[in-house]
Length: 530
Image (cartoon, rainbow, N blue to C red; front, side, top):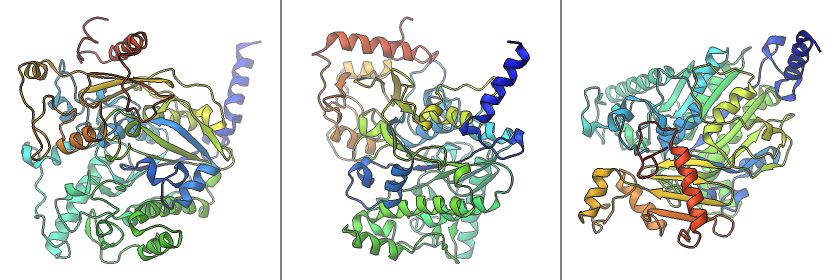
């Protein structure tokens, strides 16, 4: 066969693939992608996973599309997880200013809420934008300008917000400052490769530094997502919708959510309000009619938001041209957040794409957030730049029902801990930097959360609140070597490292191999030699 004929056959195979039914080289749009990312969402807030909640749209999404049951985030707190989703890289590779300030080259990293998407490196949105996609971002960021989020550090670039905790957003002067603050965040996020940025939160609601704004407002987020979708014309698009639900303030306390003022937003007080979702009274009523208490209605509220986006895409006639992905950024603090345990790392991913993804598909293979960016590029037919650093693998074949394992083992990192997980085993190692290890050996006592007794070892994270609840919920939290049999102990409560020395040795070798890719980042004995 001639090289010319072989090339023609290869091109025809590529362009005729069902995943590329719309390809701009043939005068049609390439697939659109909508990425919906919830916050702090645990398994028990999904009806289809057995949660005692009413989530009809998400339950239907699981029936109508693909459910990835063994999807994992590699760093189970907000910033690093979001970093990995949008870059395809492990959070420990971050080269953001704040991250490198905390961890200069040569230091052991303590991966948590200090990671930022670097303006000088490629990320998913920037690559898609460069390849003709309209890109949009609405909702919570937490991956830019950490120097704006830490007033207690008083960095030279810290920007004073100009109001106090008790300021009234209805006051014109205060509201104007809040609007200006929001615009600055939008401009920073747009530098990452987003054409449309609106309705954003720089981080969590408390970082608005105002009690009146410390309330969830899904209506505002979805309204801005709909606005972006209304601007879509001929170009394919990528939209990231990142909700503040179900993060704190506790959304099951309805004064923070469904009974709060729907005009209080991340840009201040918006007098006209929003009408893109069913009324909040309707959410409470329908939740009661389904047999649930008001305390669980926050789950239905988020469910309505997902449904509104699905309905908008359908109304625009774009359902068969659009891949919609829903996934939490990590599990809830009530279970495994800020740890490498199962309910922190493992979260459900749902993929909906009528006409391309068959209804009722399920995949139980080991897939992770680092795989999201390369998968989207693969689905969209976009060739990554040669200097794009990506740790993930494309799971595009899984969208069509392929059950081939993507990998045999997955690496995870959080604070002072690292892990490697296979389908059958998980090994977690805790190793402290030398300066901390020396204090431990000297009998130093470390600060605990609030007035709790001091600790023999520090929490794995800087955040004492998260460390306290994580240690309280997980009996082996401080064990330096932990091995779990995932077939018999899915909740990872029985550390059997002492019972299976050969398995432990093998998993340690796997972790050592994973850690070699982080040049200049020590981690105990694992990085002493190749």
